[in-house]
Amino acid sequence: SRIIDIDILFYDDLIINENNLTIPHPLLHKRKFTLIPLKEVAGNFIHPVFKKTIYELSDSCNDKQSVKLYSDINLFVLSSKGMPMADSFGDVCP
Image (cartoon, rainbow, N blue to C red; front, side, top):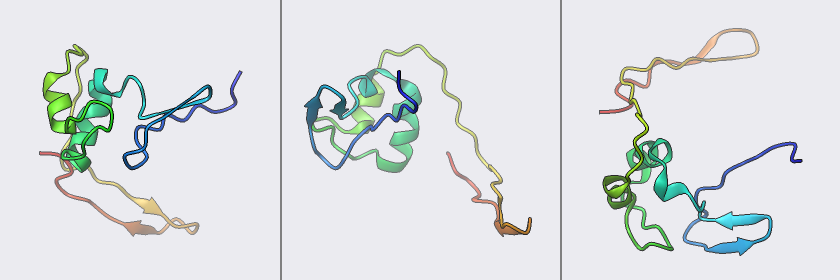
């Protein structure tokens, strides 16, 4: 059993297939909950295995899972004294 499970989606354009590590994540292209947010920050990134952009992978994904994007998210980071250090990021998603 693992203490922690971290999914590494990409590491630059490296392709790694080892017993305990696979990069890019082998199911990334099948999951809208990873593709849609990734499209917002790196839509033109080309998947090193499929040679398609994140936009293209997202558009061709058959995942039926609903993914909701939120706008006008207010995120606050509190300092150790409880004082706000950052305020609203505004329109995070279209």
